[in-house]
Length: 184
Image (cartoon, rainbow, N blue to C red; front, side):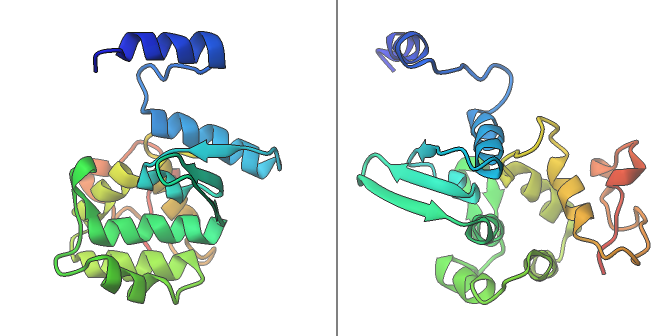
């Protein structure tokens, strides 16, 4: 854009914005918003990016001039809905034949994340694509480790479930045994 550098400089000097070098701005926003939300510090995410609706808290769409509050449950529902629908901007092909309406019918009635995870993963019929798309869509919330989503999925397991790497695609395996899992 023509005035990109001037806008960036004004945001940094006048508004104390931080530049996200080497990491997606969405992830920096995710880290800050999660920390603020967990500490009950007031904040507003001002954006038109639908991906940020994964993040709980107050949101402001500066185009429509509308405020909305996203609960933690609504945020996780947004993530799983995006996995089903897909997102061309993020190069994510969702599940064929599932759009906004069908996704809402599948995800909206669910109130536990494990049920959303199980439903969406089963509809993919392809764990490699499911996990890859999950990593592409997930906004980081606790660290800049790109495998945060795999760790999060691991946390969904029941304590008595056996932890193995049999369902984790080899392209996503890590040397950290804590990130290997199977959800049945």
